[in-house]
Amino acid sequence: MSTHGEEDLLNTNYLKAGTGVKSWLLTLDHKRIGVMYLVSIIMAFFLGGVFALLLRLELLAPGRTIMTAAQYNRAFTLHGAIMVFLFIIPSIPAALGNFIIPVMLGAKDVAFPKLNLLSFYIYVIGTIFALFSIISGAVDTGWTFYTPYSTSTNSSVVSMTMAAFILGFSSILTGLNFMVTVHKLRAPGLHWRRLPLFIWGMYATSIIQVLATPVLAITLFLLAMARVFGLGIFDASLGGDPVLFQHFFWFYSHPAVYIMIVPGMAVVSELIATFSRRAIFGYFAIAMSSLGLALVGFLVWAHHMFTAGISEFAAMLFSALTFLVAIPSGVKVFNWTATLYKGSIWLTTPMLYAIAFLIQFTIGGLTGLFLGTLATDIHLHDTYFVVAHFHYVMMGSTVMAFLGGLLYWWPKIAGKMYDETIAKVSFALVFIGFNATFLVQFIMGSRGMPRRYYDYLPEFRPYHAFSTVGSWILGLGFIVYAYVLIKSLRSGPKAPPNPWGSAGFEWASESPPVLANFREVPTITRGPYDYHLTTDEELFDGFPEDAPKKA
Image (tube, rainbow, N blue to C red; front, side, top):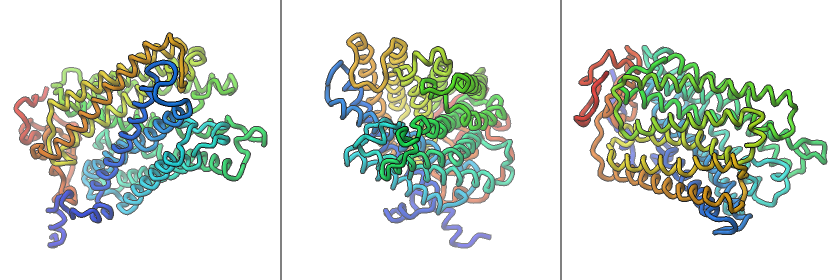
């Protein structure tokens, strides 16, 4: 029998459990911590996006447009560092994962609530270091901080590398917390073969975070020590090896690609199942492919270094291993497509983002084959072809999944519905703007346009101009998307518990959930995609009449 205090805990909505700033800053509730992460990464995304628009404006025409070459290098580096370390790595795991994972598991919170809050404040401290480096002169090395330039430039390398160093600890603690939560706090009846695919994706991501991030931390720490104390580990004149930095950096940073993309895949699995009204095709294969990507991601780091002077045998070996990535990725794409086949597809805005993910991830993956092949990589390495490939995998895929996932779980997070019509307008702008910006860069790169260059030959001007105009459309799409969320918070209708008619476990709670997530500990008796065991009346709760029926 519950006590009066326990009843208060159950009956209190997390948004109403103390409304003061102090109650938020000292909260141990995973949902509030997820919301604070969400606000922080959206601010980082805005800042990184401003730098991106400035870069594209500078490249509108040859020669100087709005900044000098030195300012361009700083803006370029800040765009990359902010987007990678402050936005895209923590976007889905730390923000959406923090909010959704315990609710999906039927748990009251994560395994270590205080550690969860600590990881957020570590993220904030790392962000402060990054902002300090911007104010104190920025850094001009590129987000990869390659030696030997990073050990000799006068820019704020130490403060920015320390920012990434600190942010790494937040990533490690978050991953560790999620792994223990999945192992220890599952609701009764929720065995491993009933776990939602979002949980499998977050679990695989957590493994990468815990195992790979320490390598980046020690690498950046050694770089800072080389600058401060003159250590020669990366200095050839002192017996060191600058290429060693690349090995260390990419041993983390290629698995980090999967810290970015695997969570996006996890979100897409949920979206496609819900809006196809079908059980996910090949559930176990998709779950294991997430773990497969986590494994293979540790074996292919040197495909970033085919032109760095590694041996021919090593290049051949890493090229062959690179093609293994296509297997788990292909399994996911095939199974998602098979799920859509004969499904009762409901083209909500989250589903549109999931379909965009499928299109753009396929483009990004197939163009990666050219870069994994030794003969073609020699020509394409360090060209705009790499820029386009990277953005199709990271922004065109992960960011699309994040945008779709945020709208999908927005009723659960905010307790409000959003304007579907305006949301679809924002999607159209984002989708058109993204492809206009980056698809043309494949052509530029294949014709020899180097990446990271401040100036270029006049023959590339039409491509750069087209790409810049595309970036303006993309930026407008993000502004409209932000308007959708703000409008929802101000005047959106109250969300029912399960507005999408999803069979997912998280929709069994209220929207937004009570402070302890559930009024009583749930018992799981079916899988998260068992639509054949339910009726539409059992799932849908007050949603519009145009909701599709199950196939």
